[in-house]
Length: 383
Image (cartoon, rainbow, N blue to C red; front, side):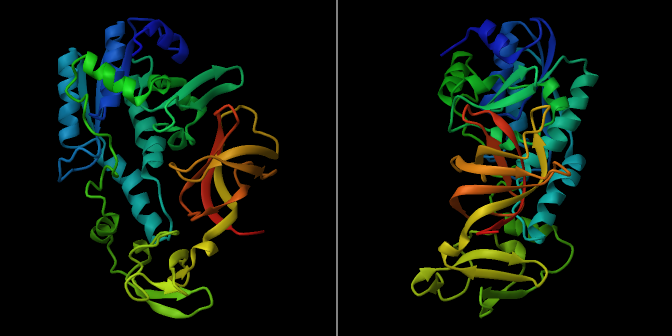
């Protein structure tokens, strides 16, 4: 366990000791340790917790509601620091929840954590922190922030299993100037040890796993309860147009899905091979199914590209990419639009199964530095 804060200060380009800093506190062990480290190092720490939704349940696998706000408050009280609770429910609903629902209705697979970072956390919370005359906003994300003449860069965390760089690909240089992520240099094991060292009650609290506003994990029921129009039924078909059954709304399906398709008996088979969702045809309200090998994709189309360097990379460059947060890095060739610099095509050097519109594709170099990334609009087997 390391507690040499001079090294942490230098690595993270933190302000002078004694400066006022805001720590975003979700009620979990990571943000609690972040606040404790800064407080004991001599900073004037202000803990801020965002109330993002009206949580009906008080489980321990979500964040920012119910028991988590109480845990954040208790940690601040133990440390003897001020604690603010910000009601961002309306902002969160407009920016994150509505986008989440619309994405599924449009056949996409959204990532609400990235949308939350783009909007509420790194816009509204940064604005509030500045109003408190804070020098920086510090979060418990597992990612490393490095400044250079070419801009501010993000690197994968030392703990590969906890790395959250994928979720921060859309962060802007302006936001990064105000943000700090000290936990990127620690492992999760070290963080829990530090929590025990400071006798924090959240030391053994489980990590957040579910979508914060869907604590039971059932996103389909959540969408049904929050859509104004009745579900629109449609067909479930094979690629050659054979109708196998019907569905009650395309939001029930995601590309790559195997279970719960509801056709072909209990599991659904094609020559004894299970069905997978291959495509979601929103124009004709169809769900296309087929064998897993037909999910294979070598090309990924992207929009809204974001790069961390002040200089956009050359029109074509090699990189390692992630197409989902828990996926391993894949060797790829990235081609950026020479006109807009905001769209691109990624050629994967090995096939990926289940490329889903709405997910992100993030680029890394061989030193684990985040080059940039974009939002997936489509995948193809070949161009």
